[in-house]
Length: 223
View 1 (cartoon, rainbow, N blue to C red):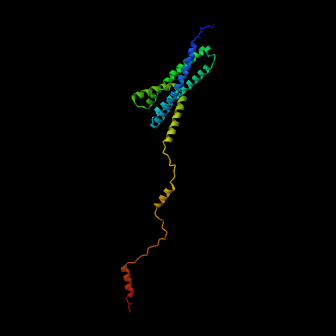
View 2 (tube, rainbow, N blue to C red):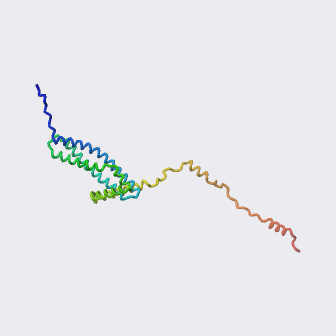
View 3 (cartoon, helix red, strand yellow):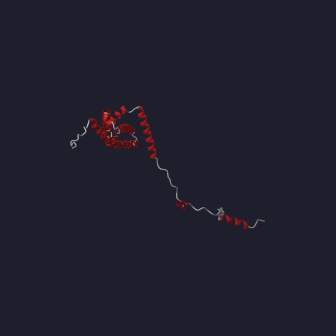
C-alpha cells in the first residue's frame, strides 16, 4: 500500500520573493501606462502654456516630462531584467539576485507612484497660491536632478514646440479659385465696351451772331 501522506514541498523565502517579483512586474506594467498618460498631459500643458506666453511654466512642464521619461527607461530596464530572471530555471538558487531585484522593484514602484497624479499637471496651469508653491518646489527639486545637457535638450524641445505652435496658428491661405460662374457674374457687372467711334461735337454758333453776319452780307456796298 502506497504512502498516503505525501510531503508537500517547503516554500522558501526565495519562492515568496519570486512570487513578489511577478506581482511587482504586473503592477509596474500598469503604472507605466498611467505614467505615459501623465507625460502626454504634461506635453499638452507645455503647449498651452506656450500659447499663453508663460515660458517659465512651460519649461517646468517639460522638465517634469523629461524626468518621468528617464524614470520610464529605468523601469523598462528593471522589467527586462526580471523577465530574464524569471526565465532562469535555476533562479531559486540565486537568492541574492532575487532579493536585489525585489528591492529594486519596490523602489521603482514608489518612484513611479509619486509621478502618476494627473492633478499635479493641473497645478502647472493654475495661478493659485497653492499651485505657485508647488511650482516653486518642483522647480527646486528638478534643478538638482537635471544636468546641463538635460537643460539644453529641454530648451531645444521648447523652441521646437514654440515653432510648431506658431506655424499652426498662422491663418490658412485660400485653397480654392473662383468658379467659372463667379467669373461670369463679375464680368456681367462691368460696363459695356463702346462699339462705335466717338464723333467730335459740331460747334453751334450763337443765333445773334449768325443774324448779324447775314445782315452785313445783305447791305449794298457804298458808291
